[in-house]
Figure (cartoon, rainbow, N blue to C red):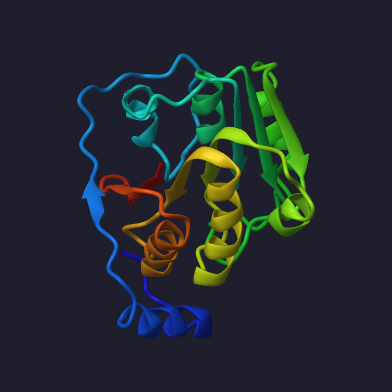
Length: 205
């Protein structure tokens, strides 16, 4: 688990949670593992989750038309998702944040990494600019941005309201992320699952 940093929004949410109805977090256990057709040979903290995508999409009966990702970095998860969806959009500033190892501009490198997959479109944007006034809907949205409560809640709530299934990386390594997902589940009435392996993957359906 990452060292927890102070964030006022997270502290306020932790206190508020003591007075709110509890949210049941179901343990997600995949019934089968399957490698996606598209895999990038790059180092990624997301490695391992690609093996449960097929199981998850089938179990929750998620359509395979459009998917969206906030937080692409070098494209490992984007390539995996593109194996299962007709159209995939990846949104990122491609300049890293304080929770990523990378702090350089990696847009050109990521674009080259994902060039073999024509169903992937990259959008160079902050998530806040992308969601502002945006009413598009997706079959699945993956949130893997800066791991603060405030950012995860803001981006994640929009995502949960605009998709059949929303995924959140790092629910086990960042308590602020997990609490944000719990609060979004409470707000939207969606069911929350949590896959504890590989730093954690929250699932809202």
